Image: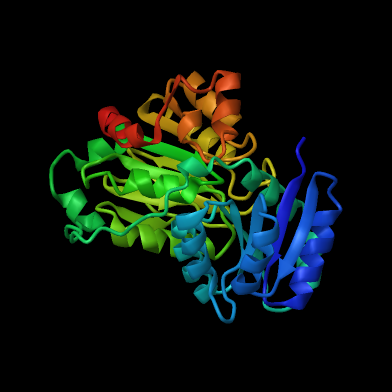
Length: 355
């Protein structure tokens, strides 16, 4: 396999040293430099262009988002964000993901060295996934100037018609995604009208970041987008996103589907896990569900999607040409879990057709 050239960009000398040392331990990775800010990084890149950049989002002289926008406009390159586990850091990271970064690695304010050493496998996996990213599919999101139509609240949906309860029971869409998924989900959910089936989503993302991600989507979508919590109902016009660091399952109580957020071990090295969600959907929704597996590295979700298909659910995978990383959909196809694969821009229409 081709050696992956990595440039580490972080204003902390400790982080630069620890990350560089950890990455060098992998024989497939070569650290070609470490820079304290984007200005120094650009000087490095004049000599040798990296395959992957690890980037802090909060730095002096030039912030990570400005650097990302410049990078994506001139020479798109896979970027792994290194962001602090804070509310402010989460908001900034959402902006960076929209600007074109492919994934996130978290770091605490204190005890950074020990944390990174404990998370070395996650760091290496993120860099390798980024190196495989199809940058043609990474398109920075430009906010529309058009006003977003006023949303209906959940109460309004439930009281708008006599068949609201039946629609909630009859149709449910489950989506699983990982690397490249933040932009892919934005592309799908922003195209859906308020009259669409209830949606449940697992996006591989660290704790604290899913709330900011849901808030961002909620501000630009016609449908309601929330970070899920136990007891939330799956209803038309609402998308519920699994909280980082915990699994999300679907349960059924009478005619209603609802969410249960649970603790538990990593499944397929992830928490939340797509397989955990999909298997619960297979059990409680069966033929009333549509499962969609999208861009991401690894095989999380493939087995769960197969269970959904065997339970009578419709199943789809995102096709290779529109995936940032064609890993999870590829594994689903190999298992026979996906009925067929489709382009990212056709997924909203398939969701509405299913409804």
